[in-house]
Structures are given as C-alpha cells and as structure tokens.
Image 1: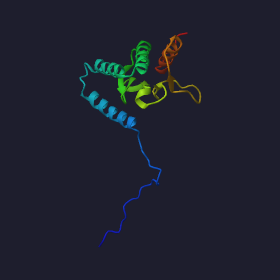
Image 2 (image 1 turned 90 degrees about the vertical axis):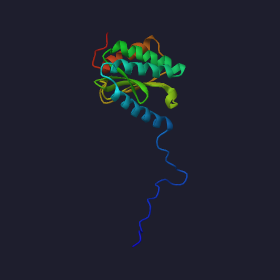
Image 3 (image 1 turned 30 degrees about the vertical axis):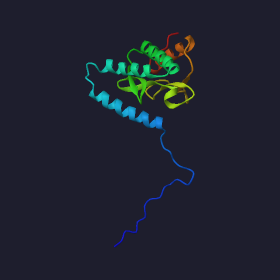
Length: 163
C-alpha cells in the first residue's frame, strides 16, 4: 500500500512571505530565556543585588541617548518606589513587585524605533475609566517629565502621588 497523503502546503502566496518575528524580537526572547535561567541559578542572599547589577550593566551598554534616559528612569523608579526590584525583562531594565513586572524601559536602539518608551504592565494600578495609556514615549528627561514619571510610578504601585 502506498502513502497518498500530500505534504502540507504553505499558506503564503508568492510575494507575500511571512517573516514572523524580527531579529530584534527573536533576540529579546533569547534574552528572556537566559534571564530566567540566570535568575533560577542565583543564590537567594545575593539575588536582589545581582539583578540590580545586571540592570545597571545593561543600561551601561546602551547608546548615549538611550543610556541617559534609562539612567534617569532607574533613578526615578528607585526613588519613587524603592520596594520595586530591578530586573532584566526581555533584555531591558524592568522593575517588579513579588517577581511580577510593574514597569519597564525599552530603548529605541534595541528595536530600531523612533523613541524609547516607559511601559507599565497589567500589574500597574493605572486604571482610569474605560481607557488609559500604558506606554509612554520618551525623548528627553527634564524636571516636568521626571515629576510626571515619579507620579506614574507611585500610582502604579498604589501610592498616592504627592500634591
């Protein structure tokens, strides 16, 4: 008896090739897998300090414009919410509570985008009506944006922003 089953055909048509994830997205997934392995191997006594060292090292690797923004975000988040733990998340600095990411920085250079972003996960208490922003574009830090970021971070963790 011969096998008459035909191989599955591609669902793409000529000229419409599906590329899937970009190289940057694939790298971010590899970074995340490595971060999970590294976290699992850490000693509990040094895990928090080691994670912050990783974040600072990743920030130091960034290009000038992204590095300045990431350093500022790190300083603001650590000041506004010292109980959030710095960690790497998909190769970018993030800040977590009980292991769950609350907010994160994404450099423009890593994903070849127009601007860096500060994002908040569903763990952030930013709910406001039926719709609210969860990602903010960053082009520069000044007193006004630093104050706004501090207020957003405090709100995200359930602290009332100072008046």
